[in-house]
Length: 300
Image 1 (tube, rainbow, N blue to C red):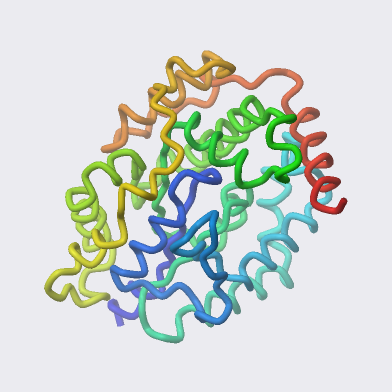
Image 2: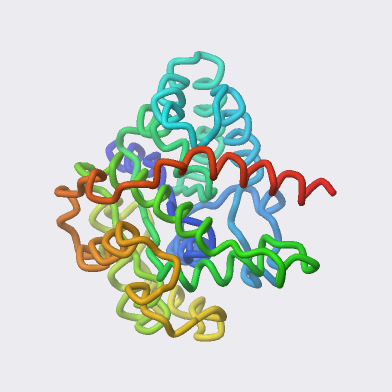
């Protein structure tokens, strides 16, 4: 019975766009976690050759959840409003039905979806025993990738998204660690370390998962090697070679936040204080306006 309960603990992959969440998801799959029906997972493309690992039913549900809140993702009131949605019987039932489907193979299972971070208060209420893997990548490199991935080709040389992405990254990371700072079952995975030292980092992930799931997934020989095979230096396609501390356009708060997280990757995040990483006063208005512009670009 204890083993069955362990298998039902979900794994959630959290991180901002283009920070390695897809790669970490593939590592979980190679470790033995269930990603959902393969027919409902998007195929790889130029943006992510090895796949995105974003399960379509949960993407649809997260979009529905966001729309049900009634205010912008960037509104300061959104966090507590989405937490209250965990008491909505219909939404709660839908989410638990999706989880039950994931449990059917009898393995640990995972979900990865970028806006999962912004709806995290809802999921913490539903799954208080979840396990979290959180990615951390130099935001300057992620911003380079984000621009190539999200802007239409005709706008790539005309629109700058760096400052927008840095604010997006800051909001994602503050949201994660404000919500989970006292929550023990979480592992921060640094993208640069993962690509530079794949075997060592895959072994670290395996040891973390073994501590949380025991023998829910048979260890088998070569599991770390299977995970390591997914990691290639060619994945690091947007390495700007610029330390984030020197990134133009990044605020002092953003640089301090990255330095803090990078220096606490092995733990000790209980002291995280979001007040140390303030946002500009125009943050919510600016981000909401950018969301409208992106919708217009997508629907031209």
